[in-house]
Image (cartoon, rainbow, N blue to C red; front, top):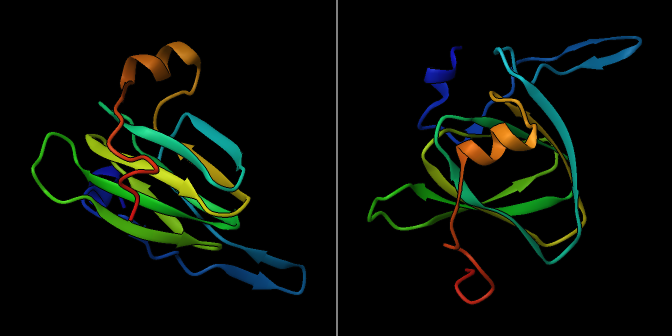
Length: 137
């Protein structure tokens, strides 16, 4: 699947893993990417509240869960919410307002198209405040 084929999707069906007597290998992303990050979030905290001009990212939940709020940037569409749980893979494409609220300690792996050095990240990221404790649902 190319990165364009993921656009418009959010939760991604994981490909069949490989299993033998040694354990399991679960493929997450087979696209060209520039960054892999481990993020650990504390309970009752927000992350993101931004959109990316060109970047996309996959988020795989290792432990915990989070509320994912999203809508197409600069649209009048209603904000949508999904609860993303351990073992699920989420895709966020460019030009998608998104925010995550962590209800419990959560560990995620983030696989991104663009490098995550501060300069590149800041040039591509537009911070917004579309979700907060007052409008959380």
